[in-house]
Image (cartoon, rainbow, N blue to C red):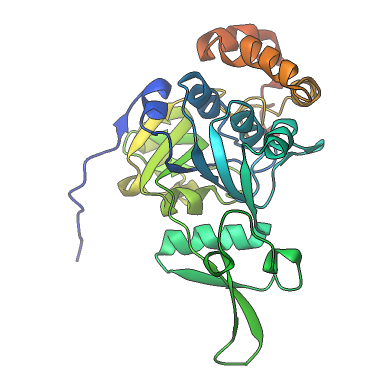
Length: 304
């Protein structure tokens, strides 16, 4: 028997309209892991719109998280990592924590991944072992220990396991290679936690390098990671992950990332970066980096 879901196709909106959907004080998952597929353009737009006091959740976020910290967009984070791949701790995150403006609840990479997975499949908690024996068992920041985790005996083997609560953010945002007009999301490289983070979220927003016809996605259906019936909004956002990478489209801009990390060691440096690279808007930014984009474009057959 064939069942047809009577669900409207996702609405295509602009980057500004997408960022405007997220009110201050809400919880949000923004995709990206290490130097791939970070939601950079979306994070820059949140800063421009003055969004504040977001509760940010992710497994292994990178430059965009530090950007959000610098712009005072986030006041709470539940993450397993808050640095910049190949460099170290995020300078804005570190400064905001030291100032008392940002609270971080620490988990392991696996436990945050499992929390998002649990939210995606609709169960209240997930079992892990990676927290056992670490300080995460006993140390908390803004959650009570009973809210953060529970140590229990397995009812089948009697061994000790750690239960972590599943998480369902208000909004989920990912940047991917392509999405079709029906909302079917395709990812060409490692899925990381992006798929589970999006599925776990109440409102799902997908930014893509290209928006294509469903005939394109149907040619290679195994790349479809999220079905269109789950997606609420789609946004055409070419180069939306810059300065991180988008496999098959462009490489990461290590030179700019190092420049950012060095400049943002001080509040004055962050203010300078924000003025020169964020406040100007995406259109002006793309013109500004036109020469760099040519150098970073992926080589056919290699992906980078």
